[in-house]
Length: 387
Image (cartoon, rainbow, N blue to C red):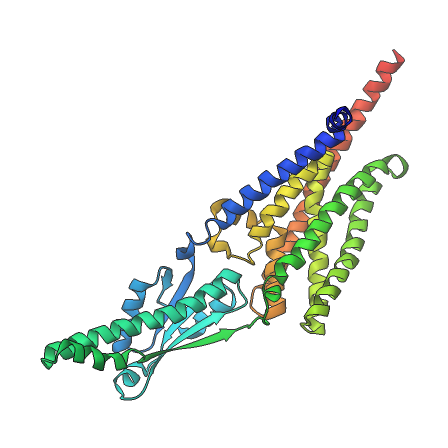
């Protein structure tokens, strides 16, 4: 027992206990607060209603506006709405075609209600919108059947039960036609692949940044401070080019997305890893080994802000803010576009470039200030020793 107590009192073991508890607290707080708001913020998703029928369609459009708990956009044409959908700025389009009234009044025919869904979207968006399409069509059909039963009962003095029986035939008058763009291959592993491919690069970048910043500091006496600093950036760039290749080869061995996509993603993840090394390097240059805790916090936060599980619009305010400075957000969003289709890949790649450039600038300022302070302290120490 005494030996165990002695072991537990060792400063390295105390540090390990602290990290074990710290990791649990941070992990649970981040995930509970981040994903807890997912269903509460569904009303921030955007849905466009494109009505091309000015008769019955107008009534249906008004009914949809009352039923849907989303941010509705009605002053848009189909072509523009489809462009916004491809860019993930819209999450679904509901189109009432121009022949809707004709189909509604024709015997034996169904009136189509078109739903456009971009599957290259966060997991909750694609699944939620497909459920909404089915439920909404069923609800509208039930409402239509009930209204027709009341009309038959009132206008023909028909017994209530008989009127309901006749109206039941109208319960499938509207048919949902779902148009899926940018389909994702079957399997949950494909839906979450952008998040995990981005996360492994960021985690690897954190560990490399911790070791590489330490190496740069130890090489200052032999190289000089600025050559050591330049070597850190050059070495980071070299590692960033080749390290992601291993993970991508393994991922593509399970699911091939094509050779062209492979090389595009190699370039993307090389840029992502370099940006992540520079970003994580800020904490290690500033705080030394203690930067690990800050880096770990940011990695956990970025697993939510990546936008693979839920879109930016649904995120709580703090996470939405962090997503704009999140390496994983830009990388995962570009991954979705390259792997499955969708727009804004160039915009997200530019985001990574700007993050890398900003991190290099901040690292330069931190490094200059830290080394300047050390140089100022050294002569003072020498003088004190001589006196």
